[in-house]
Image 1 (cartoon, rainbow, N blue to C red):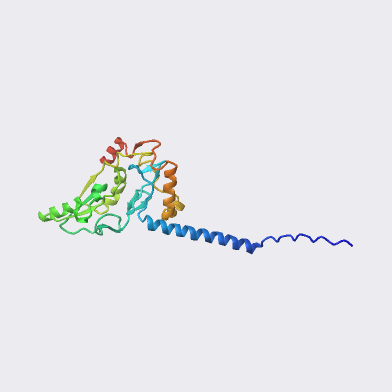
Image 2: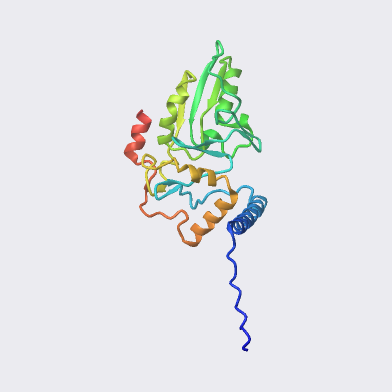
Length: 247
């Protein structure tokens, strides 16, 4: 009588519950990893910005310029983010200074200042020291009560100023000054008129993540794409600059 050879047991395939547990464990591990990575980047680089190099604001016709006091705007590209940055106060409308009101004060002139970082006073810590605020102080001391509204935003060109003009006129100013030119002459891969300031919704969500911005910045740097000019041209060509000022 011959002994029977014991058969090799067939391994059981994990059931649906096993796969779900494995998937949940994998997803949970990734969430924890990226959560810790996000926290580490926020602690190490609290003011991390999107790729920028040599004052180039664009490449491949996509908007790539952001500073901690900026927020995206699909029409203008960016606005000032309401809040306090050092001694600089940004009101709820997204402009430097106190809250603006459309209601006029009787007997007071209203002057609106439209422009770039020079008008905004990018390097000036005190809100009352920018040239618009100082103008109001000087004229008021000469018995000419004057209120000034600062619509300057750093990085703006005459193209953005022209788009913003209708918003400025809603405040019914008696006078409007404008100060543009420096940003217009910067090179880019597309003119401001051609640049797509809006971006897909999923990307706008991702851009709130410092980890995403950190990885994207360094991957672009490794690929030598950060700030690279492929088709250099002025942000605002000279003829367009003239048209904007005339408008």
